[in-house]
Image (cartoon, rainbow, N blue to C red):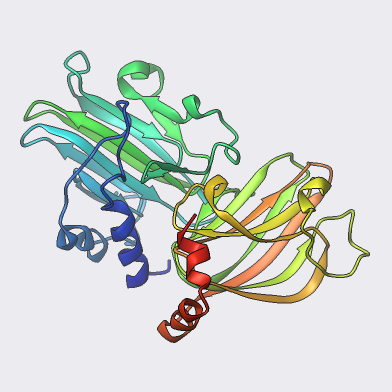
Length: 323
């Protein structure tokens, strides 16, 4: 398995520690405090360690945590912890199962543990409500509401998270995190600032996004939308009317519905199309009517400091950060 780059750790640090990362007026979203050194230590420990079936990886769960490995994680409150969250991440072709093992909290006293199908950051959600197959209220699964009726929650994509609030010292719970292969991944947050990926939607009416939390250069090498196979390569401003198209989006948040469109593609082609996007978040988003097998292949790499400076001098950065 690939080791996460330090740049990714820095991007997550920026996102996770924004004051509004866990804001909201409901029990699912809270505020938190954590130091930079503590967050970096999450990644410097056994973040990507391989485990055998015979020996499950175990460690304590922190009040604000990032988990990218299968294992068993136990949180024990040493004092009241009223605003905690843990972010789970898998490979692009995997989904995540969160299982409740041992739970000793006071639901009647206001404690809760809630699994969210996706991520919430700075008040925004990934995947967006437009791209997720479930309505928003079904993406929150509260232990105190479901109890023994639902001891396991499975994500729809490679990221998930939990919110929890514990009032009493000594209260504890244990979660087991497992990963499962997803044959047709839809909605992915990349673990790496460089790589390649092929997104396929097999005749399903859905939207899928591949999110890269870095400024990158994108090379789209193949694009197939069935009904336009015999037309030359080009991009069109009115692609949404076709019902099947690919968007390149950019911005600073994780909600794709709030990012700015950079270009739309709705004509199939084979051959590279290059674009440099100097945004905090770069997204390849495919919209499918379900009538055809849609496919897009692309590679991406992190922009270096000189390239970012050039983008800034060309005022492209304003496009990225003023949305």
